[in-house]
Length: 296
Image (cartoon, rainbow, N blue to C red):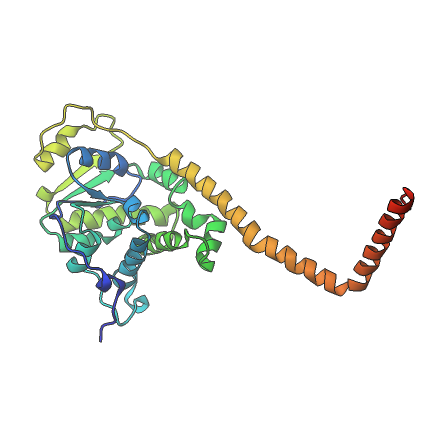
């Protein structure tokens, strides 16, 4: 008997056809492409859409657990996600891109065979450096790892999701040959899964990237305004640094402060006689000062 999943409790239906699958890895110019697609009147789904609705984190976590984990590690009584489940997850969107959607490349292509597919490309060395300074921090900084393992702070579900995403993508390799192999293999899987006439590859390292190839592929008129350009590396790193310090403060308030109270109580109990003697002596000195004006 199939167990009831979180997605089975969701009452949503697809509001618009799925038009585009952007199946490239994050930090390959996807933020720029997202701006371009919005200007072309599409509605892309990104990680920020997941973060704006905390319940979505649990749904995507379930999607990974039931669909992408090795069979031996999946919940045995829960069916994997397919088109009905993705229709619920992505009901209000006609584009899916970035994390966590991109790691479901084969599943999304199977669910939406008529959708056009876009791959944004970036030199691997630049991609790895960008990931080290942004998304990977959520699973490589020790304090974040501790929070994920102890399931504390509101960021724990996000860090758990990121850990799971890169478990199925690269077996949690964060740099080096293993991460590069997983990166290249991801692109090869997409290319082999999609007919050539349904696939557009955009080299985001190219300074001359423009509206023309994108609009031709999507059969859209070319906007008069310049093709957008954006980068989020510095902004995200700054946010992560602030989050790290916030967690330090959390640990100080939630762990060290109560620990200090417990230790103080223990010392007071252990040395109660000495504490009372000190208190009585101090009170006697204070009374003498009040009566005589002398501190003795």
